[in-house]
Image (cartoon, rainbow, N blue to C red):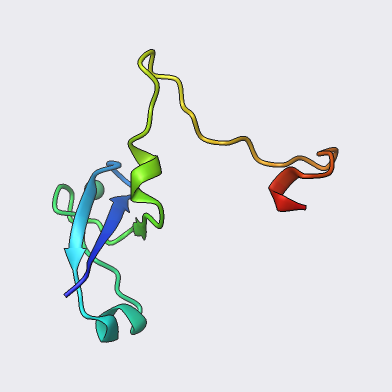
Length: 75
Ligand SMILES: [Zn+2]
């Protein structure tokens, strides 16, 4: 059974959910183990989420603005 990484939108807790493919396709909405909220989202790139620099800066790539040049977002 595959594992999925989810993050709570309320308390930001990241947790793993074990679900079958069938359950996943049915619209799995797991409950946060910390605050029991069902407002959770799946982390599609769990590896990236934890990648922070030593000074705590967020390394998330900036979104492409309307004036983004060619090559941005793969364009
Ligand atoms: Zn929570």
